[in-house]
Structure formats: C-alpha cells, structure tokens
Image (cartoon, rainbow, N blue to C red; front, side, top):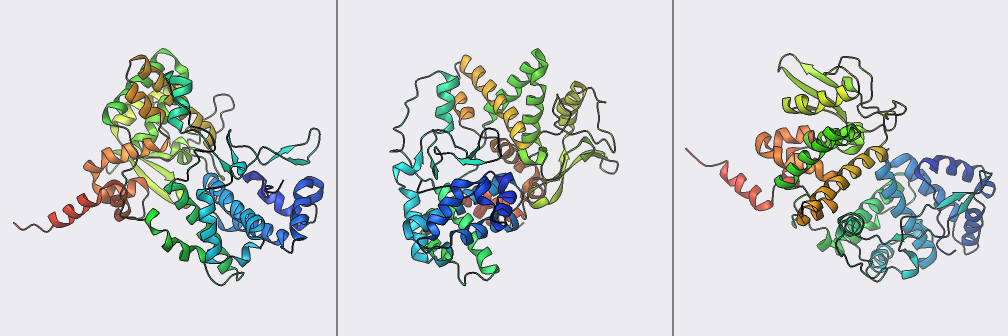
Length: 432
C-alpha cells in the first residue's frame, strides 16, 4: 500500500505517539511499522517525520476536533506526497514542492480517490488491540454534494449522479483550507528550529486569485420564508410528538443565539450547563455565558421571546423549573438515557434529524425549491441566519461581541458586501 496512513483517529494520536517513541509500533500497528521501515530504506527519515507530525497535532493545533481533523488530514497528505512523489522528507520542502503539491491536489490520481464514504484509517483486529490498516482508506474522498444526497434519499425527485472520480474538483474553500493547514505546519517547524523559511507563504502569492479577499461571498443563510417554515414545522412536530422537543430547542438555540454546535456540546472538560444562563437585575434581561473558539468566554444577550417560547418549554419537557437556577449544573443538551452532556456528533445528529424532517414536510407541500435549500444546508447556516437578521438591529459592533468575532471589522467583512461597506463609510461623514 503505497499511500499508507500514518495517523489514526484524533483521540488515538497521543497513544500512537507513545508507541512510536517507545519503539512499540510493531506490536500495535504492524503494517504502519513495516511501511515506515520501507520508506526509511529509501533514505527518508519517516519515523522522524511522523513524530514531527504528531507533535504538531498534539502541541500546536487547538483542541477543537474539527480543526484537528482538518489539519491532520492535510499535513498527513502532504507528508505522504513528499515521501511518494518527491522522495524526500517534509523538512526538505521548497516552494516548488508546495506548488507541485497544490497542482497535485487539483488533479489527484484517480486511484487515490475514494468514491464512498470517508473510511477510517485503521480497524481493530478481532480479540486484540492490534490495529490493522483499512485498505479502503484513500487520501482523497469524493462525496456527492449534500443536496444531491438528500435529494436521492428524502426529496424523491430525479437527481442525476455525476460520474464518480472523474468529477473530483478541488473547491476554492478546500484549497484555502490546505494553505491554512500547511502554513500552520511550517510556522510550527520554524518555531522549533527545524526549518528556516515557510514555503507556503511564497506559493500562496502565486495562487492569489483563489484567495482573493476582494471576491465577496455572502455567508450561507436561510431566507426569511424558509426560516419561518423551520419554526412552524419543528413546533408542529414537537406538539404532536415530544421526541422532537430537543430537535426544536437545538435548532432555534443555534439560530437565535448565534451558536456553533461545539458551543452547546461537551468538549475537552467544558460542559455547557443551565446555570450558564443568568438574569441581570440591572438590565432586567437574560444572558448566556459561552466558551467559544480558543476557549474564549463571551456573553450573549438572550431575547425575551426565546426565554418564553423556547427555553421554558424545553426545560418543562426535561422536568425542570421554567427558568434556570443559579448553580444548576444540569447539561443544556443532555442525553435522555444517561443525563450526561451530549458531544458534538450527537448534537449534530439532532440538527440533521431536524433538517431531514423540514425537507420531508416541504417536499410534501410541493415547495421543492425550499426543500433543496434546506437539503444543501449545514448547521452553520443557522448561526449565519441569526447573525444576518440581527445585524440591522444590533449593528456590527454589538453583533461582533455577540457572535465572538475579534472585531467589528471582521463582522462587517463577513456579513456586509464591500460596496455596502464603502457606502456606509462615506455616509457616516455626511454633514448637517
């Protein structure tokens, strides 16, 4: 297997590094151990590269699983490219090598593309802790667009499936993500004095057209009409079947309070609990304390209509008092079976279930355009929908604090088109 994975699941990386450092890799990852030795016979310090990669992921990348996964996927893929296509260590990388990698990303060998779901890198050997390589794993994955997958499974309208592998295309967003990940990797290598320059920054200038910030793209968000359908459909569903109360609560909370799914979920010792909601006597309003990206704390104002129509209803469903209590350490989104806080994947499943329900109802109502809009959406559309609607009420300065942006300029750059920003800048200087 020429392109053999060199990392495992995110939660296994620390243990994998210990196996490598303690020379125990052959016991648990026999095929990986053989692969590293084969690469080293070609004069490449594969074990050293792998150790650097694991150190980078464990010591330099943030704790968010999604971020770790993206950086892991890209850094691992680049290292495999160095070994197999350039026949060198990643520490020997030049700007020409990174440029060649970018071109390779745009048109990878078809044999390196998986045309199924994302496969795990390793699987357990039955009855032991030995990890066997999954021969279905590939460095690239071609997945049908979400709207097409939903169309085929839910909307039940004819949806042509594009030819697999032939249709692989690297999006600008994916290329930008690749630059970001590799840039972080080489900054880390410079920091620990293993390389002296960052070849990614040089290459990025050559490919400026795909990262041109002047090409404004409005964030994906639901229209007012579709969002109204969300509220109506999920409320009707919860009225008729209590099992949909968590779906309704999570979707409305993400939208109204501008949250990421991770900010509602159990992660790295952080558990969102009901006492994070607090009443401020001075303003006579509710606030929610949130731990966001980079473990940064922020406070979000909670609309009265949300308290009255979403939070109290959900708490009564859970058998709690209508309003949160001080020091109430009950998870905001608990497992109904164990009472423990749900992790990100479980909350995402609630959102996906809600989206599927909305798609089904809209399809039955023959609102196929709206159904396709929801089918193509991700949970992050909810945060963007809430932010875009609130921008006119709050303005970019207050909204920046609500959604956790570092500055109002960031908020304006995301939610206000350049021509509008220029008009606003000119307009504020009008005289009496």
